Image (cartoon, rainbow, N blue to C red; front, side, top):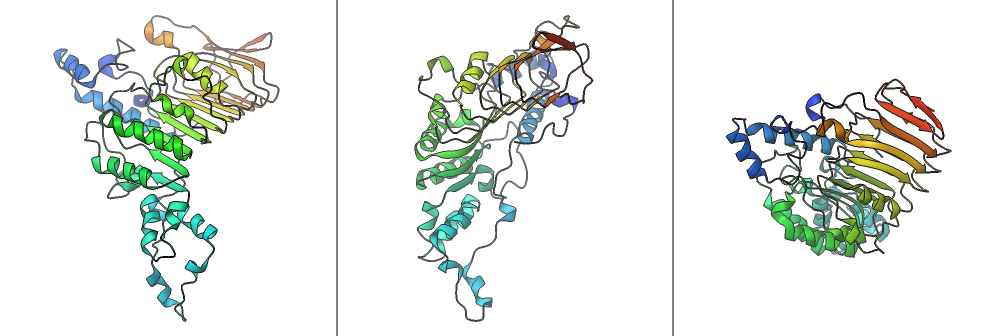
Amino acid sequence: PQSFPRTKPSSALRLRPPPAAMDDPQFLVGTPRSELLANMEREGRDPATLDVGINLVLYFVYDYLPHPPVSPGSAPTLSLAGASWVSDGVDRISRLPDVLLRDIISRLPAKDAARTAALSSRWRPLWRSAPLALVDSHLLPDGGAAGQFTIGAPSPRAVTDAVSRVLAAHPGPFRCVHLTRSTMEEHRGEMARWLDILVAKGVQELVFVNRPWPLDLRLPATLFSCASLTRLYLGVWRIPDTAAVPRGARFPNLKELGLCMTVMEDRDLAFMLERSPVLESLIIMGSQTGVRLRLVSQSVRCVQLGYTYLEDIEVVDAPRLERLFQSDNFRQSELTDPSIKNCSSKIKIGCAPNLRVLGYILPGEQELGISNTVIVGWGQGEHCA
């Protein structure tokens, strides 16, 4: 997983509601953008601050996403004309076994991988039989070099259409798919079809981010039937109501789970942990709603929590847990009742015999309980064994 903590964001990125909403912690969740803007105008507040705040939050989310395994800047230019410098003019690359050529193709961005079919009849069928790496930002004209486009800008229809064509044309499996550039509210039909295809054809690594608005768009429950996943990062979604998810749904191969700026209930987080029997890394960054983490897992080795509305952390039974990081979290009660001060949150460690690193503990703000012993406050920045 990504190292933690990463570059510490400025105070503007602390995932507090923007200035127009400081008096209501639920101001953003479940409210249409048009209604928010209208309310701000009536109250004499600058509507532009809303998009500025959300753009900062979105940049924060992107900063914690894993980097794709392919990048357009590193992709070589493939051309048979390049063989002309060889003294005998023989194209030796095309003589390599299919398994090696498919490995080469799987390391290319999707556009370049598809173009290999035009090299020769030898290459034509290989793209469809190679595990696909699809990163939607690579489909932009500049390959995503300009960085993130701002909230309020139209979602690039050409990118959404290209994603649909690639997913439909390739038979799978999908080595990795990063979908971060579409405003999913505008493309609900495509979004549902994308997930159906990814489940049917098998995706191993999925990074799926909703570009707001709304901030709490519900993630289709189809995702819970994707048994092929080994790595999953979700950003700016409302987690499906797990009470309605089929009991047989599970992630039997999932090893890394990242939840960034999500809306979820305690039972939803518990459900995902319970249905991920080989999960090793859990990352929660910037949840939109309060979270009580009750960790029961026979496989989890590392937990990272940051900038999250967090009440309590309870490690009930985690025999393989080695590292527990939590930084710049704050209690939901601080938002619902700002008058509450000096109210300690609790970190309770039950069964975690392999825990080696624990941080950060804030003096006077957090209580650490190990079995029947309560230790109040370690200095921030210290690693506690």
